[in-house]
Image (tube, rainbow, N blue to C red):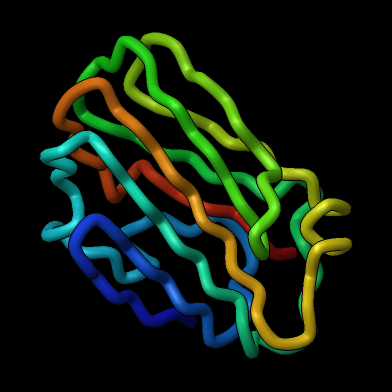
Length: 138
């Protein structure tokens, strides 16, 4: 389904095939080593290159849960170099990002298809891998 690489400040998930439905971060293969964001920055890369024929979920969704109550978080999503979401989330333990599947489809390329999520937390954050999830494909 996917391969996961952990680099300093980045979690990269390379999809081998489109996986249908809601998938937790732990089921993607993201490990505990990636859960603590000591500098308050997160970069998640979802690489769809080479997954073959696929259909996006009606509203592709990324849900990120964290153990701390955050005052304000800043989220930016890019797909193939284009910003498709830029939002501030206020007060809480989670953020939900709803993506436009038509925008994703229109920006798709033959070779490289990469969704990058940038997050800025006002303090140290610890991700909840069981609750955090994605739902990209149907």
